[in-house]
Length: 172
Image (tube, rainbow, N blue to C red):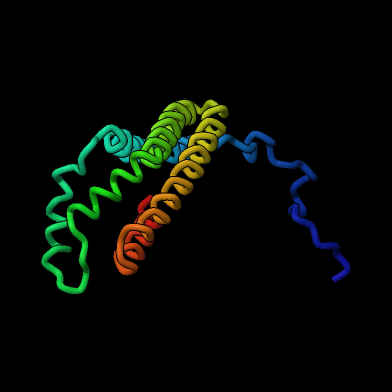
């Protein structure tokens, strides 16, 4: 019991294992996986941004949304007409909220794609570009969505404005 505790065995002659066995190696799979996820998310950001840029150039509310408005018109509790939504669309378009969100998401998504490709090639600048793109998309998207939600409270009933706020914050 007088022997000291040691990691090495008695017949080891105090020889340590070669350093190359335990040498740290850079992770190549992790950054590539993150890069693929960044590129997929960027494609979604760009598609939403492109939709907002198109909405900023439209004079009339798109026909695709008329089915949604028809569901509101058939409900007795909520009075939202196509004219109300057209007024909302005009107000948002005239104030530039579609433009702010559209360009910030498109530019941020573009930076995410470039950063994701560079990160896939294991270039460290890709992470910095991706972070910059995400911040641009976050600031522009949240600020314009908040402004849109404030506009919805001025035009729509309280229930519809609350639904718009919740969906705009959850989905961007």
